[in-house]
Length: 99
Image 1 (cartoon, rainbow, N blue to C red):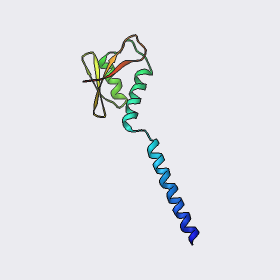
Image 2 (cartoon, helix red, strand yellow):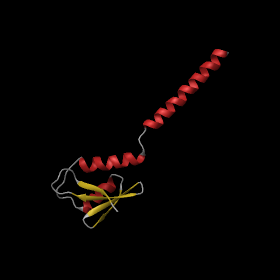
Image 3 (cartoon, rainbow, N blue to C red):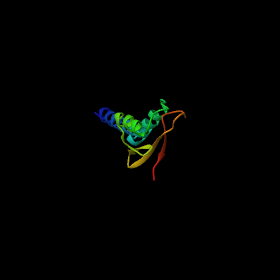
Image 4 (cartoon, rainbow, N blue to C red):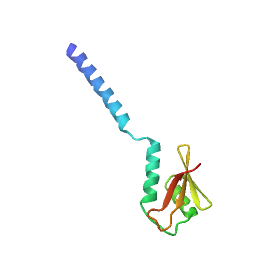
């Protein structure tokens, strides 16, 4: 009987430790969204893309985006990013945090 109680306690402690480790190693949604935005902007090139096309691309990939003047606005985790098509430079656009 004592062996069973000791083993149950050991299993419980092991389960708690596993849950703590798993929760620490899981990335947050904010990090995932920002990483996905960066990957999308650096993963391909189109020298002819404009703000309208860029916003459309972002929306089709699940981002909250809209064109404005010569750039697109992307809202991620209460921050607003300015995504500007970069022409002949590598990637699709330059990303900065809007004021």
